[in-house]
Length: 275
Figure 1 (tube, helix red, strand yellow):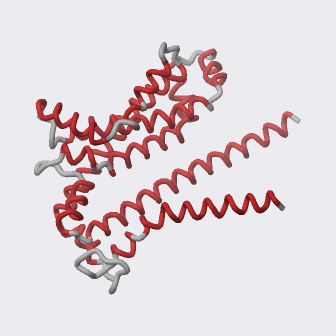
Figure 2 (figure 1 turned 60 degrees about the vertical axis):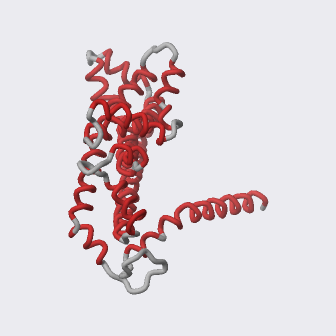
Figure 3 (figure 1 turned 45 degrees about the horizontal axis):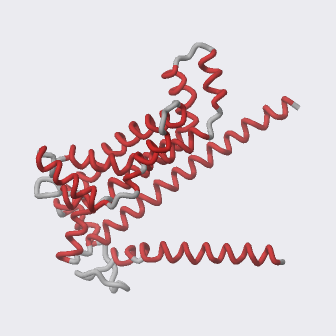
């Protein structure tokens, strides 16, 4: 009886915490369908005017395309660097491994204001402010830790005997990685890449330092819309972003679930044959 009560209490606590975290975010959704010219909750008459405004206003489209471009490039760079770093940490025999890991994870600890200010001072001399390259360099630095964490966890769970078996059959290190290791850690790589993409897409603090008339990302444009105009288009954009985020992680979760089910089905015949 005590165990049942304890379990029920934990479930209730989890639900309460989940609602506490998600409810403020979900409030944006009904606000995006309001017909009012200002952000209001609860909304009065419903309308899709602010969703149409996203397509009609070139400012929002340009900033969205700029953010998409930066996020894609940053996530690709972060995945490449993060996978290489994770391989070196897990499979290599590096000295001061813990120190290197701490340095790689430092962007998680350093306040983004400091990163943005440092990048602004450095890039101002190099002419990289208000450029895609400048944004990609900073966002890659911020996103690499998320890739490293995911890929390291994936590599640790991989049985090294599979890699050793491939090498004993004549496969080189590169072939072994692409044919054996990468398929096994692919869910971790995809998860890290997804985190990297949304870290870049959603980043506003450093983007404020680097944005300008020549290049403004979507989060900075949304911040300006809230700070200056209280534009309900921001709520519509936030709703679309929420749909993309929840949809992406749902697809990723379903992909992992399908892979796990496939592995179990593959393992059962082998177990029965061995018996």
